Length: 389
Image (cartoon, rainbow, N blue to C red; front, side):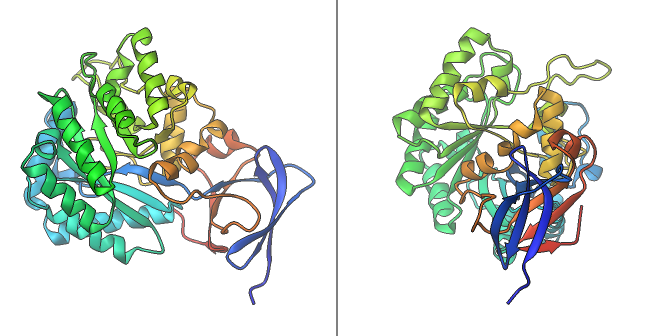
């Protein structure tokens, strides 16, 4: 029988407590005298990464700033995407995420043609190999023109459903006939019982309004809690009085919003020799105030879309707090409970009898814990992990 472990001076919901661990569970939570020295949070997750692209920046630098130049650089680099290359880069990403305390990732996988890409199969193998350490979900990143095609879309959806990941994804940005194509995609998701995850309106043109149609279709199909929209940058430049009803409708429909601070800050309004004015962050304050579930993702790490970053959700949270003037204590759910719910995974809890899976961050409060590179202790099933990022 394992020896109980007591952790004192822990900050939980603004109070100082002691955690008592027995085996793989939290046996007790009791008030503690004094001030907190550590803050506790559930193990974070990341609902939006790209393991197939990660770490290619040194060999795939775009010629100019911007989203479409990054896409071109990535497409040119795909000649290097052998099984050995993909596995090495994805395993490095998973190792980094695990060392940072992550418990789950959702990776989008480039799917440029109707045929299944090598990266899809390889990441499926890695998901099986890493099971028990990190939950790895896959979402195909398919052009709306391909997934919304009456001939190609059904085969892709059937393949995704058969492989068991349960997430169908597409890239939508001012595509022709997008309402009709989106309608097909929603019918495919409904037929196969799949969740949906979109890259939508990733630009600064007010007329990019694919998000609105996704919201409408989510309500029409009764898919509340099963649709996640990443980016939605165009919401940041549309008139506030036009955006407000869209956010209200999204909250009613149950659409979640994934804000990607690193990539959006890097790609939007980028011009050589000119300081960017428009930062491309979706209106996350307003979205949450409307009742939407708002989550954060690292998105790109050391690739043509963002040359820096890491697979560390705390770094994503810190950047989001700086970019959007957030109080970290009020937004922890964006990388823990809310993000977990958006991925359709069981919700983590810091509570008596709950699994002892959590992070301790050194600090008197959350601002103190995150004002610098965090000092962390990672617990999985009641056992402290010694490796750190």
